[in-house]
Length: 158
Image (cartoon, rainbow, N blue to C red; front, side, top):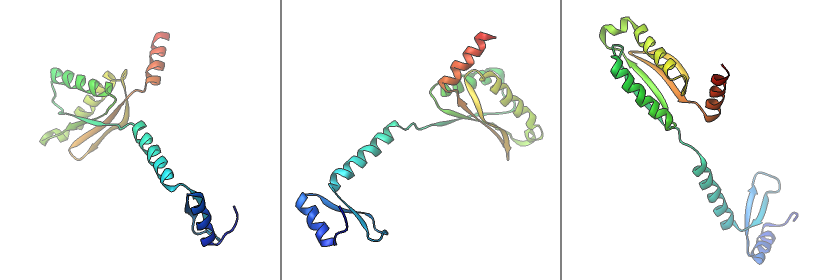
């Protein structure tokens, strides 16, 4: 509308039944807008609510293994991991070493590699196995729907 004195701008806003809102206070002269501030705040709140509603929260589940795990226990834990992946959660697989087991971390690495091979159809390794202190970690995330479709198409071609 142009450059006005503060009092004149406030009077114009009051006459129209709106508020005078300062947009850029650092500008010379300061920039203001005549608007319904309550309606503006309400619309912003609704946009923020819609954004929160549409966002997805990725859950990270954890499954702990030991280097001397038996095949039955391994299969049971693998089924639990599959269930977590199907629900859309990422899975942090931990191998815990105790005592002399630290002398052979390759046993834990073998378990993680076997698990990665067994789950290659349903998941992708996000973080490769890494030894930190007495634990070895690997992060697995579920395949996206597009990735599953392309993987199935490749399998059919072969």
